[in-house]
Length: 146
Image 1 (tube, rainbow, N blue to C red):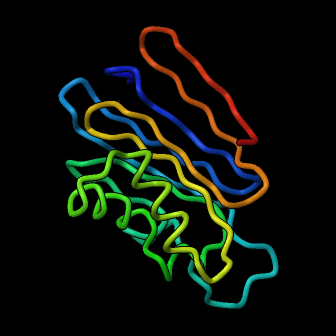
Image 2: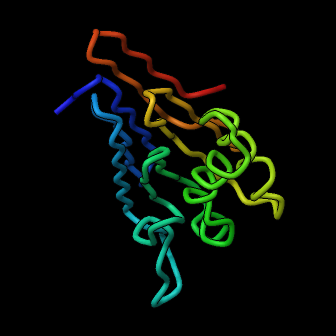
């Protein structure tokens, strides 16, 4: 269901994420991953940990991809909502801030987000991030590089 036409999704070789807002401003996020090849036994990635790889609240919805350990350490998805709420930043400014400030250990990650107002944002510090956006009015956008 596409209400307000703002689902956006991200695809990396093993990650698929989606964020959406409906016409009443309710946000939702989902993230799925194929996991890390040759991972340590018992490793749990960022995707199932709410606030790290996936988060949705009254401010926004966020889905992340990249190096799970860096995403976990930075609680990236929740931080986007937090800086929107506490610093008063817009969703793109919040995504940019979190990518720059919370990945200072050299971790590589990317994220997509949508605000409760329908503003779409993305950011990444890797070479590329597959992403797409579609609105109910027919607007569509696909991207890989900046």
